Length: 189
Image (cartoon, rainbow, N blue to C red; front, side, top):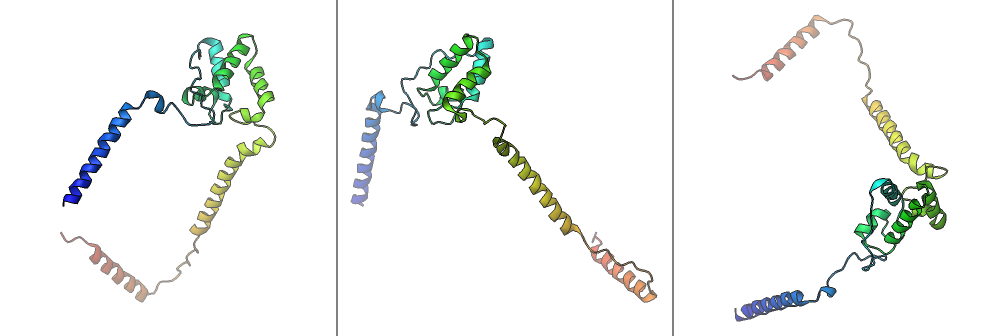
């Protein structure tokens, strides 16, 4: 019994010491953000505006471009969720290009020419990329047709043979079976 109370006291003391050490830890030792390769704790969160026509165009571009920090998010989401060092620079580059009068398509084409098609959130619907857009719809339609054909084949039954002549004995046997069925199913109230 004494051994159990000593052990409980030791565990309680360890818990109190751990709690005290955790509260005395400096703020720098605590988590400072996401743990991905592109995380930059010094990344600027300032100067991100989406007001007016220029802001709307910048937002469209930021949602169409994938950040290259490794988070696989669009540029706009990465800047606020992952706080990497890439997205603020790219956002500033987009705003500067749009302020100089470049169109959204021109700015996007500049990013594609510099970083390749992988910078786009969705590949363009042309060439072999069409397979990626059309294959899921084709697979769903094919599966639906196959399920329909299988269900239809299972629903087919042989057509019953027509009854041309009923004898008096068969008719009496049928009436007796129906009476028995009615009596078995009639309520007892």
